[in-house]
Image (tube, rainbow, N blue to C red):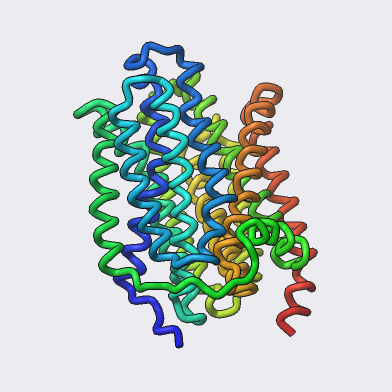
Length: 393
């Protein structure tokens, strides 16, 4: 019988997830310093971010599904130990090749975040699963938001290499805490091969319409989310605002609202209100683009829009995962790996679409694009309501 997930253990999983995902985002404010250190062009140093994201994408496909085949506790600890090594490689790199290889490894191993989310869902009682997912997701949101600020502060004090050495030390300490608190989770008896497990991921989504709908919603919601955060720097850094990167970065702190939404959405999903929560989140997402579109007229209204946007996105994200995990408890790791591919594709579409829209139609074009993604997502949700009702019935 499932003994449940203690609150302290849930919080430890949330902190571990936040520390891990932060490793993917530390580099963004450090690119200039890295370029100067290695004496390479700014365009070339952009490979640091690209390779980190490529590594993360490969990890979603190749590593996260292993959670359905091996002891998740062991998988988490191995990934953590290898992350410490990768972070030290980055911090001590003397050649470009070593830096690039180290960053790719950091991204590859950062997918331990998704293993932790699936682990939390597995350890929690069914009635508390949404709350556990929401709490760990709150840690992820906090890690993403804090990464840029922490990286800038530590780099100012000790240089960009100190950021990765500090992260290696924190990861090592967290690894010890996880080893003490995480229960053993024996691997299930499975007759299929690792290759067969990977092939089963698209089959899961194609054969279950609820999973496919949730994947499509993730793609659209994160396309809207990415469109805003990618393009926001363009008008705010130009006249008449001319904000510095530090000032623009402070906007990200408003995203902490998303952390609170994640926990609340998880609790609502536990009560069987996942479909209702999704619809409400999508309405809020669509409504957020009204004040966001008024960026040129009112920064306070923009801030309201940012809070609404983050609340909505995290609410839908947590609800999606709660519904996915409840549908196929035996395939949680494969489900989260496949689901995050939808997330990554949506983020890429949003980023490309936003820069194109801004070039042709300015900030109103970006706002229109975000609203369009939101309307399509609302339409997908509405059309799937009867499907949800029939399955629940």
